[in-house]
Amino acid sequence: MIDILVLAEIDGEAISPATLEAITAARALDGTIHLLLCGSSMDAEAVAEVAGQFGVETVHVAENEVLDVFSPEAWGQALELAIDEISPDVVLASGTSKGNEVLAHAAARLDLPFVANCTQLTADLADHEVALTRIQWGGSLLEEALLTADTRIVSIAHHALEAEPLGTDVADIEAIEMDIDQLYARTHVVGREMAEAGVTLATAPIVFGGGRGVGSAEAFAPLEELAQLLGGRVGCSRAVTNNGWRPHRDQVGQTGTRIAPELYVASGISGAIQHWVGAMASKKILAINTDPEANMVVKADYFVEGDLHKVLPAVIDEIKSRRT
Image 1 (cartoon, rainbow, N blue to C red):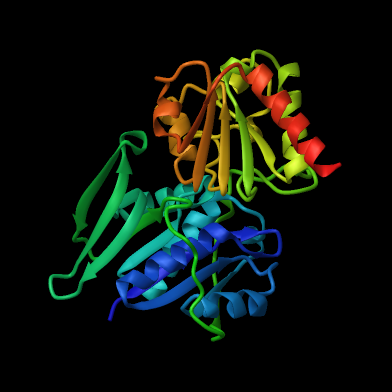
Image 2: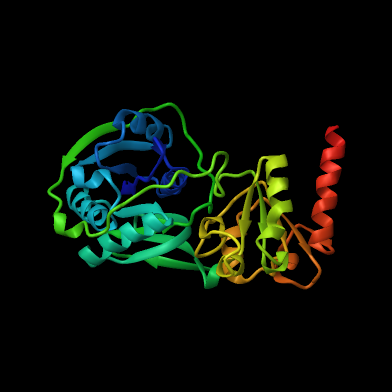
């Protein structure tokens, strides 16, 4: 039996969906799963209740006020101390910006191997090996590898698998008092901006993406209207944010948000590999484009060949007519 330590990320007042995906991936290793909760500002009992349902045996609460606010350096030191305390065979986190950064700090401090953006894990207890599959070349290649170190540090690509609960168990809670060096907490949260009301780009059931082909910031109005009509969210490609048409928080891609909606409508998007990495977990993709050979069109489930400035208004009119 091996021990797996998962780093918890908190989304609002609950364990993030990305962390639940990492816990689900950990179950494939058929070991004892521990969860590290940094800071004491969260309700540990509420976390233990949810974590237990996904197979976590113990929630370890790293108690230090420095950890109450996210700092990659401080959380990295906390993870280092937790690894020394628990001696896990595998350390996991979601492959989010936070998860990857904290794992990188801990791996560097402990001189341990770190493999990012994995989609699958299996363990060979006899040979003390962990086999993994990871995303390479911007999502165009899946690589299989073996990790043979005493402690392996791995991040799980966000949306690589579905988070699946097991039952109704509640995890145990153990407090770990940590002496965190204030000097390591060099990065601090200096302010927070409330997100717009409604679904987020990462959780929206429908995402309406626009690329360079949309033409201008003002031309995103039909996508905004469709998102409002159907309860979705507007996303965009990197070219759009580079042109200043949309804020970075709307960017879908390798350096933006990875999405997994039921439907992704990609309008005027060529489908560069960096964008595809963020969109490839979508259940269905509909591409609207004038170029039938565009990468996004080739990879889409459905394709409408035409001018998006004519297609989108026609779709809006049809939706409104059916609702009257």
